[in-house]
Length: 218
Image (cartoon, rainbow, N blue to C red; front, side, top):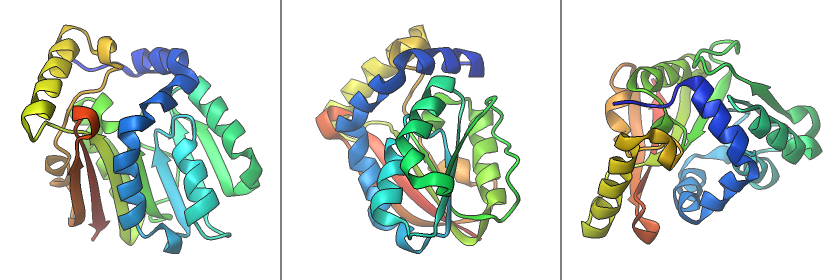
C-alpha cells in the first residue's frame, strides 16, 4: 500500500500547521482513554513520537505528570516542532521537542523512558516504519514501561465500516487526500518484540473509528 514519504509528510503537516487540532473532535476520545489507563502520574520520563502541535503533551505536563517528570518528543514537520515548542515553553527544560528526519531510530539512550506515546502517527507510516517505531519504543522503554498508541482503525459497525471504506478508497487514489492517514490494526505490529497487552479499546465518534492500545515492555 502506498504511503507518504517522509518528505511528503513534512510538506503536508507544515501546511496543515495548527489546523491539525481541528481533528480533536474524534481523536480526543482515544487519547483521553490513553491518559486514563496509561498511569502517567507515576511516569518519570515520557517520549512522544510525532507530537504535532504539542496539545497532548501540554495536557500531560499540566495535569497528569509529576512536577519532576520530563517529556521528550520528535516530529518530522518544522512547523509542528515550532508550534509545540511555543506551546510547551512554560514548562522550561522539562519539555524538549526535536526535529526528526523521519527515521524512527532516535539518539535517546536505551531504557531511558517509562512511557512511549504515539497518537495518530503510525497510521501515516509504511508497515516497515511502523515496525521500526515499535522496535524503537521497546529499546527506549525501561522494563515495565508502557507503550501508548492511538490510531485510526478498521470499522466495527455498519456506519464506521462505510466511513472507512470511503476513507480507504480516497487513500488508495492519493494518500494526500486524507492527510496520509489510513485505518490500521495495531496489534499485529507488536508481535516482533516481547510486549504484554495491558489495554485495548475501540471508539467510533461520528462514525470515525479509532483504537487505543497500551502494552507493557517485557
